Length: 388
Image (tube, rainbow, N blue to C red):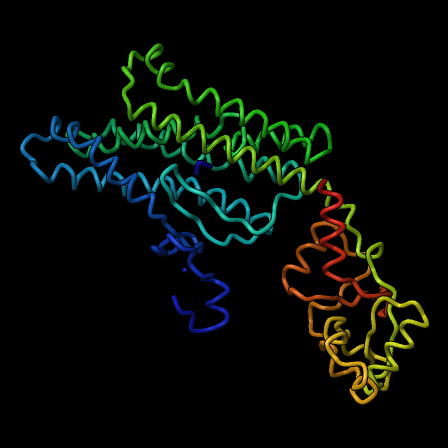
């Protein structure tokens, strides 16, 4: 939709990730951290300024308090945005996707979800629940209005009813990055069985929406006789840029994911030589050259791998000292995350090497036997070649 403080324990750190720059944590909602950006404060001031004359008309004599009432309206509106985003969060967690946080900003809100939908149905449900929640809030607000007398409270409820109606309908428009774009992606994905194609179709639809957004003030003038002003055109431009950039980013990500399956660890592996950890560097290098191995792995007396020799560290040792330095001195100890299955590929491979950055990783067969070594440099080169 266009639309973190010190941690006393490890478990709390997992619940409360660091707050990104320009963001502020304001609490939790349905178990999810809620952040606001600096741009939200600009939105709140804008709402207070725009609504002040209307509030003055409904409740004359408020003076400066009309701006305070406008800020209260902005806060209540933010809560309804939170309901929209919380619907996304609940649906995502229902499908097993952890939710990092909900962020409120100038153009609405955003729910940060760890991982994407695994099926068209998941994508559809996770996307559509947000707009439906906004439409439900709008419907409830209209029912409440019927029970309230005219006045400031009635004005707030009517404004929220209209705002959430517009929010729900607007987000159902079929183009990324809007929720309706994700619904369109799910439909195309379901029909073609191709997630990337669904994203590209929804992305192009989003670009069309971005262009149409530029003409929104003129459209409002023709349909509702609302005379556009400078702020209307400025908002239309900001909205168009937001939609265009979001759609473009989604399309670029889809093209990237289309290339990722060709990154297979087995194909990129370097042939490796297993040597005792106390073997001199000179002898290890000689054996590796003799066997045409591109990497060296140190093993313990039982033959279990314990480290990967770092090529740059070997080259840094003068040749006259290599016979006296054990190969373990230039090997990085294998820690959890540095041993990967040889058949790992695509996004899973990228996530694995991103989770624990290293120069090399040990690749093992399903039975635990050593297959080879995967160098990060080889993955980067293969990715660049496939990205051209």
